[in-house]
Length: 321
Ligand code: 5GP
Ligand code: MN
Ligand code: MN
Image 1 (cartoon, rainbow, N blue to C red):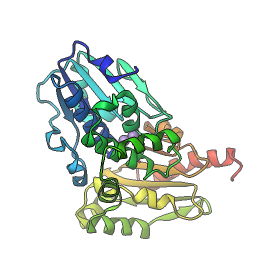
Image 2: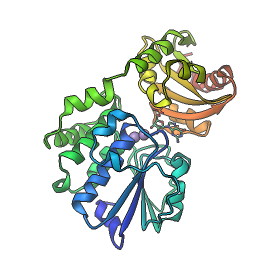
Image 3: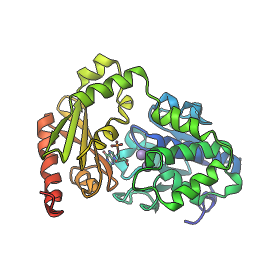
């Protein structure tokens, strides 16, 4: 695919869906696409479906039109899936995908399983929002579209600092800035700003973090009782893994939060050598070389033991243990 319009022939209505527990790139790309189609193909009916997302993303145009309904009975000519590397990541919205006339997946995960009718996966891109921009006609990228895509890129690059940031990323971000977006505000309000409760749970997670393998690894776990105590939801935990990762001496950071008894959502980050996408994929998840995730069962110690075995194998291969 060279341009988005190629997939729109004979299409009257489109469902746009992202992945479960949507992050900044997921929400930014879904709303960016919605707003772009509104301008470039005004006759199209577009509905975005996403799980609930952080309130700080609510300023994006179209945020209020997002449906959380997993079965509204609508059937679409086309379903476009953004930022999701496998079908499981569609969660409750998979029905719209299954019943659509045709399906397209636009993504940037190396671990993408190729589950849609037409695949457009660009692992060299920092974010799905970056991939999307390359498929858009710049003439229809207005300030509101630019705000969405910029937010997506900011989140997946950790404000242009992760190793997935390239010259192309910066050039696209530059074009988006030229649309007149309040870029400092987008970065501060959606990425750095934390509520008091978010700071409290972050503090708790850092205080209880444990270093292992002589400090090459670090983990922290948040249980349901902690979420209840601080009155936070899982979407309030963004950023904890990054704080763990930048601990001096750490190569690989692991953050867990309890999703149900004996079940944990795992986030992994690495700095230089460990390919965490391989570890996540081994345990049924996926992601990128330096950032990935999966869901695992057992106690915290079972999960950490299982993960550390795989991490250590890679550290040994790299001659670091
Ligand atoms: P995070 O740790 O921020 O939740 O996710 C980091 C990266 O790993 C993201 O690119 C995300 O899409 C991917 N990822 C996280 N959890 C899963 C999972 O359970 N399955 C798959 N396939 N990818 C995941
Ligand atoms: Mn994502
Ligand atoms: Mn992404």
